[in-house]
Image: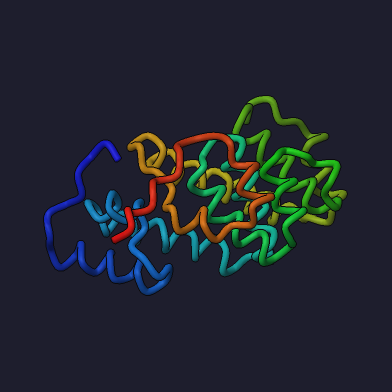
Length: 197
């Protein structure tokens, strides 16, 4: 990344330990966010506030993040959430969402992915017809607000990572289905794995 990790401190170690406990390794992005653990915690709290009181499923969230990341060109979140989407919906769905192939998706996933891409690319060009496609897929107005807010939240998080040159962890790429990994042909390249002994 373009900035150095912060000097050792209790707060930095707390961030690192949290990442290692949840992922099995300290994510590259954690090294940047450890400059402001309070802001990182705030992002996590906001995500929890948004998703914990929503009827959006984990699959819905993964479709939103993967479509948002692909539209933005954010390889990090596409890889991290691509793995989650494979678990929730299967390899073919994850590959179609990241690859921008809405016709390969069911109606609900298609509506989410299409809306997320429009919000990322041209939020001032969305129309009532676009929103009606979400309603036709079964989403109510509260959910439509939550979907849109979640896209905006993910954009903010991804923008920090991408702008600071944070490369996706090799561990993420290594565990992702090859069919999905091949679709992530955008954004920062994956960080190299450490050389063997």
